[in-house]
View (cartoon, rainbow, N blue to C red):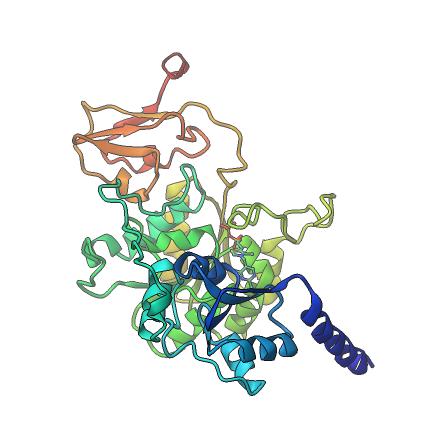
Length: 406
Ligand SMILES: Cc1ncc(C[n+]2csc(CCOP(=O)(O)OP(=O)(O)O)c2C)c(N)n1
């Protein structure tokens, strides 16, 4: 039994908290003592040039003796911390009077201006010199967060967006103008960026593995829309498969799209059970998505090439039309780890009629400047992607010749 050991360790840590250099008292004007930690300390130092500060590097367990001594030396004790009043509540439990969250914002990040205003509200403004508030830089070009050029997720979202007629449903400010034919529950990964324009193909994002459970719930609540859950391969391995088992068990009539880019892209391309490489970087057994999906009991399963738009559209349409639980695995290599790049695409401006369909994929390599479409050859993935060429109604996009690239 390790419980006694755990309590012993906590007692030792509490002793350590009193002596470690991680917790420091910075002497100053003792009218107000500020308890703070982490990034909030930097803001406090910027706002209060000469305050007495107890800077906590170890916040659990708290150094009770140190806090009591510090409280006894100052007239008023104030805590500045981000989000929940963790330090404040734990200091109050020690029987020490302290103020904090009644003045400091409880959500959002703190900054110099927020700390300044909170301190002013708390009546400790005498310590504050005049603070210059940081102003946002004006006239910066608008750059929405986008998927990478050649991202294998883009095509599936383009298809979902067009099936759901999302571009028409939301106006430029994202306000709803009608009801979509599709409800798309999302998950956590690079693909969460598909929430934003121009794709606008995600209605929910909660936590890793939530998409399938949310889709089941929405379908069971009796929506008249089709419900699609979108989840990455790594997230599916982590906590998506339990949701799929639930979907089978409860006969949920939803479509699950698994975006398999072979890696955990968002957090830095870590391997996972489906990549065939262990955490130690060695070849290992590969867990095959198709086998898991079939073994769970899903009858409607299709795997498609992420860069074959017709195939992606047809698989998703078939899944939706079936009215049954279906899984579509959309497979394509992550653009960041794909080093191949040839035959970048170009736009023939004689054929282009500015319909802007290619813009709706949200590829950062496709630009419109002075009313003219261009494709940036330094970022275009060329033959490795080719989605813009496939969807151009005027066939105005084609591979550029090698000579021109040079
Ligand atoms: C519980 C939890 N653990 C870890 C993370 C960090 N995290 C964010 S996205 C992600 C996985 C992304 O991989 P995948 O779903 O395959 O999508 P990709 O980014 O490759 O498109 C992880 C591990 C998290 N958000 N939540």
